[in-house]
Image (cartoon, rainbow, N blue to C red; front, side, top):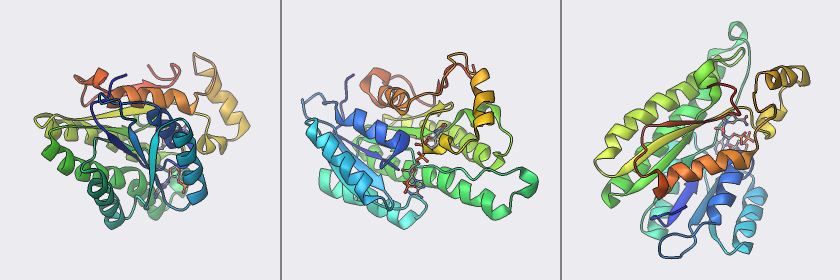
Length: 253
Ligand code: NDP
């Protein structure tokens, strides 16, 4: 895969899918034969983030840590500024950080609805907006936002999560319009059920039930989502913007 850019910010990269994305991207070199520099965002888990940094460096890559809570707009803006001041720009952004707070709608407090939107949607808006400012000036950039199969099909107990991830898809298309003339692309991936801490919380009966509906008959792996993200960021996807790429084993076609 070819990359014209030189650096990438991955939010929530200390574990799960974000970690797999950072690790995969850390192994690529750009057109100048330089490793892509991976900025690992984390909010508290310094050890996890630092271990990942070491792993990327051991593979011959370049990595740096940038600590902020994505729900804090000021911190997110400061994080992007740190990167731009250090590297002279930002080539790629992956808005990966996300949470679930599942509950049947009749029991869900409005605060629980809003909290999920703050993390999964508002932060993605802030990240896309700040990236677009920098990338517009560069006349180059690519952003991938993590949505979910739940945005496409809905789910019991996930009204807040579905709303947040559905918003990510439509917002990404709108950003794609705004970025297009400045050569900045915005795309989404919609993972299905991926084996991470997030899905580990599902009870076994529910998991068995989900598996019956997945044609590939297994949960996905974080690295399988990472491959789709890397493709959409890369030059190989240079004519793709506003798109949503499903990575769900056939769960929703
Ligand atoms: P995990 O729960 O395993 O990891 C979530 C990551 O997001 C962690 O690194 C977490 O940090 C970080 N994070 C959460 N809130 C914040 C915050 N406020 N600021 C900074 N970082 C934060 O989730 P996954 O890896 O499974 O999911 C990654 C993305 O993929 C999410 O957007 C999720 O919605 C989406 N997705 C996942 C699916 C799955 O089946 N796993 C399916 C579809 C979509 P910390 O360690 O500090 O909590």
